[in-house]
Length: 77
Image (cartoon, rainbow, N blue to C red; front, side):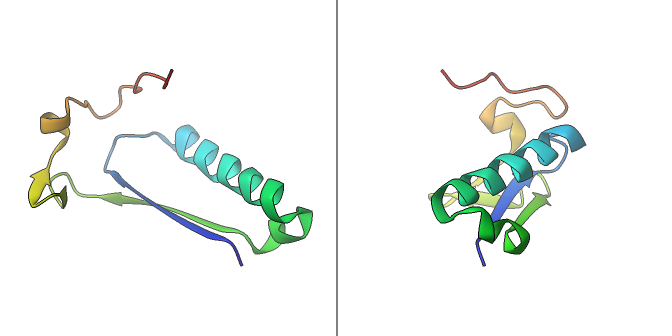
């Protein structure tokens, strides 16, 4: 069973963006493994409290990363 687990800061994405992540991740698994995996694909989008995660021994916050909850992040180029 293909499984993806995304952990994002609380409030960063709205419901529609989370749905998009779920749909696009499912489509990626289907592309790699075939249509038979669709019913068994699980995608979890979890929200983590601001400051409840870190990297390289540093606690990260939305403010430190220059992100504002509810505002759409720029699309990657």
